[in-house]
Each structure stands twice: as structure tokens, then as C-alpha cells.
Image (tube, rainbow, N blue to C red; front, side):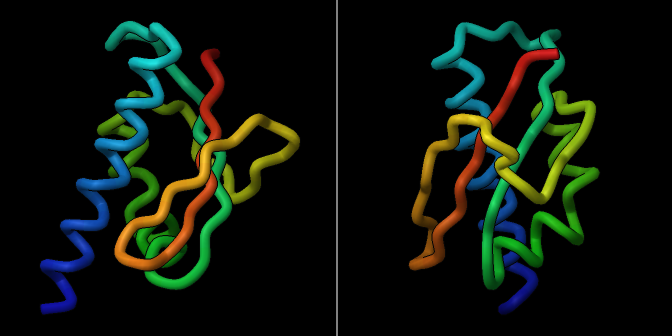
Length: 88
């Protein structure tokens, strides 16, 4: 169903962001700013569940723009999303 797919995509986004945090050597308590650029279903999830995702990955803000930050591109379910994180 659409709800299950949406939840699966949300979980996968959270997992990828947590991996990025780990690669940067961030601790669980470290706060981040999350930047993204997405289309389609991934963009819809970021818009509708952005606050939930922020809580999940300890982000103080979620911005719909890469804004010059170095981003990683991920492909999830044939959709692309660019994600950048910055420690605050």
C-alpha cells in the first residue's frame, strides 16, 4: 500500500542520514542541520514528515535546498535525493 511504501522510504531516509552522521564522526547528542533536494515521493515525504525525520536524526532544522553544502546523492526506489548535513 502507499502508506507502507511511504513508511519504508521514511525509514530508509533516516537510515541513510544516520550513516552520514556516523561517517562524519558525530555523536548521538550532536545536533545537525539537514539540507536536501528531492523530487517525487521522496520530496513529498520530506515535506510531510520532515519534523518527524528531524527528531529521528537530531536535526534542528530541515531545509529544502542544498544551499552550497557538499551533498551525497542517494537513489531510493528509483528516485534520487541529495542530502547534506552540517553539525551545529
